[in-house]
Length: 89
Image (cartoon, rainbow, N blue to C red; front, top):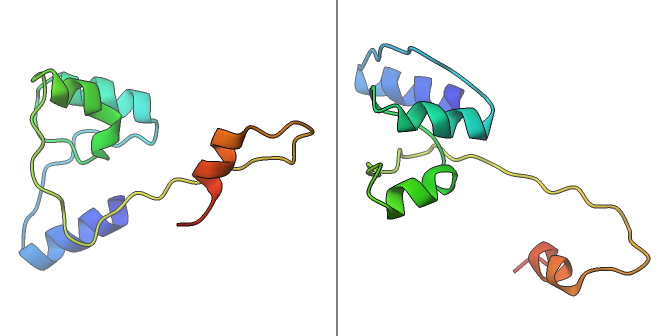
């Protein structure tokens, strides 16, 4: 996300003052809750805070997305719900 954010800021001529950069979703959540500025993070990380009115979601940043991967191993008794999640739609 950082590379995409830097490229967007450069295109817009914006020079943000970055005070923290973390890769851990739980830490992103804690920092966003401190209410000391703007946080660029996937909204799923702070879903409960947004729903509860603790945080307000801004706008999506064009061209910036977080990719998540799930790695699974073959199981003797596979979970049908996991199979549903992993099936391409």
